[in-house]
Length: 126
Image (cartoon, rainbow, N blue to C red):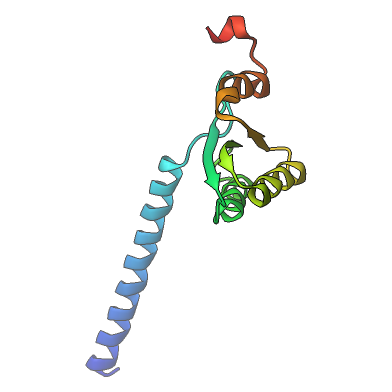
């Protein structure tokens, strides 16, 4: 076998080995950084503070739901209506009707939404 050909094969094998090692390390790092699934006594809420026409509201909600479905993060999505325009408010309500993990509320209702949706009672949350 030609020495040049052998050197090329060794370089390709070394590159494959390094890329495999990188993939394993990256996968382990992502697994460690991922929030844990819902545990007893703990639940994650993501609050989107929306106002005006909320141009990217639908994309934000869809992205958070995609994270839920992919297993990257388990959370509930709460859209805090801080002065949404009529069309944006309708969109927020449609998003909430389409998926039970999405809720729309006024900013003052956030504590009550978290308490009610998590299944706690006010006595437990104080």
